[in-house]
Length: 189
Image (cartoon, rainbow, N blue to C red; front, side, top):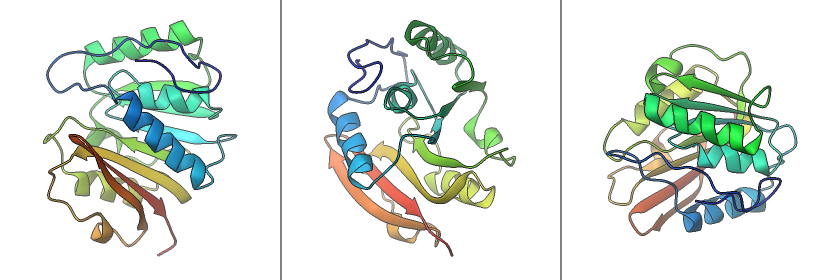
C-alpha cells in the first residue's frame, strides 16, 4: 500500500494483517481524499483522528498532504507496532502524531484537549456500533464545527446516515465493492 499524494507520495506502508484487518484500498483512499479536497478541506492546520487505525494509512495520507497533527487509535498491539514502524519509516513520529494503544470506545469516553477537524472511522466489519461511535464523537466534543467525519463500513450495512445525529450532515454515501464510504460534515445544532 502506497501513499497517494503529498510529502510522502509513493512511499510504501507496512500493512497490519490478520482477522479484522483490511487495508484501505488505494482506489477508496483516492476517492475519499478527492471528496475532501473538493469540499474545501484545508490541510494546513488540520487535526486528524484515525480511529481503528490498523496500519495508519488514512492518518499518514493526511499527514503527507499537510495535516498538522494525527492521532492514531488502535487496540491491537500488533497493529500499533505497524503504525510505529510506518511513522519511523516516514519520519512522521514526534510532535505531529500520537499513537493511543486502546479501545476506541474507551478513548472516546473522555474529552479531548482539542477538537479534530477530520475523523476517520474504519472498524473491522460487524465489530462496533457506528451509532455509538458517532454519538461519542459529538457528545464528548471530539469534532470541531465544520469538521469532516468519514466512516468506512461494509457495503451491506443496514444504516441510515441521514438520521444518525442532528449535528451531522451527510455529504456523500457511496459504495466501492464491499466497502461503503460515508462522509459527513458537522454543523451547529
